[in-house]
Amino acid sequence: MSERIYMSSPDVGQLEEDAVVGAMRSGWIAPLGPDVDAFERELADRVGVAYGVALSSGTAALHLGLLTLGVKPGDIVVTSTMTFAATANAIVYTGAEPYFIDADSATGNMNPELLRDALVSLRAANETVAAIVPVDLLGKAVDYTSILAIADEFDVPVLSDAAESLGATHSGRAAGSFGRASVVSFNGNKIMTTSGGGMLLTDDELFAKHVRYLATQARQPVVHYEHTDVGYNYRMSNLLAALGRAQLSRLDEMIAKRREMREFYKQLFADIDGVEVFGAEGDEADNVWLTSIIIDESTAGWAPRDLTAVLSESNIESRPLWKPMHKQPVFESFRGEIDGTSESLFERGLTLPSGSALSGEHRARVLTTIRGFLTAR
Ligand SMILES: *Cc1c(COP(=O)(O)O)cnc(C)c1O
Image (cartoon, rainbow, N blue to C red; front, side):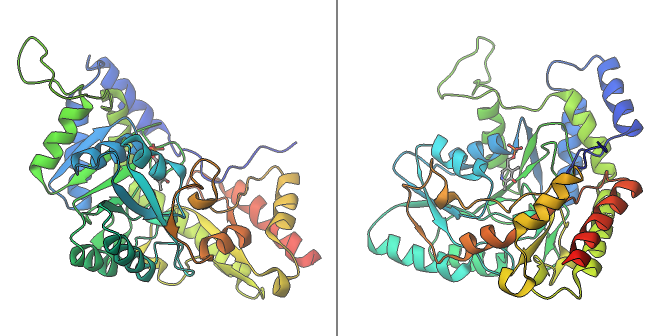
């Protein structure tokens, strides 16, 4: 069988290898060190915020971001239903209750009108909304102009889940710079990777300080390890930060590669009735992390599962969009403002190989397989 082609595999080479070996030889192994400081500086500069705190994962960054906003048991945290489970998990870690907002049909991002409806009814019921966590889906920034205005109106802080959108912009401002703080992820499948890791980004010095404090076991600044809060061991290791710095130096190159793949797909599906490249409109501002298509079965004459079956035969990975959180067994008891959009996207959507590490040969195999499928139909 031919080599497996993945949707988004890590794009690492000699530069990354040299960086990790260099960090190891420098003696800064355990666990913090100069590469962590430099990585925080470089990523914060790239996004245009004052502070970055490098952490063990994007999930850890969400967790500490929520705690630093003061989210506590019994509070409500409003978030997107169309996201990866990590967003909802982090909310539940704090003891708060996630409240899911349905999606805009063109982008999959949080629908601002439904957000407003939710805040109006929660306020009327006298419930405490401690934070809003919008998610930049698949590399497209949320409509922050609308979301931040609504958040302001109701005086609720925003923690932006920019785990998928590093390198994207909204109104000329970088994803990761919106709200009180933002979270990015460097998991293996993301736009850039530290094998595992994340960062909290903010302009607020005290916020960054508190996150750093919680992430290092909430140690008071005295020699005998005094503790007045429950802490976490969530910092990023220096070896991984070195890898992150090498990846960051290639971020634009990796985005450009993904954009090439996006353009191939746009051409491939341009004349196919009933198939649209998801979120293609306005995607110049996106990092185009993953490319998905939305299939209208009655027009196209085929369903996502039909293409998936053909791709699988050729050992090519494809997957539905994120299954909405309000449909997940673990979260379905939570409330939300749901209008069916995300369920429909989940049923009609298919995500295709999009990674920057795809070789020319891999790209050709994907495109030939899909073209063959379309022709046979
Ligand atoms: C990947 C991801 C996360 C979690 O990041 P990790 O680094 O894997 O913990 C959170 N939110 C979204 C939307 C993600 O895609």
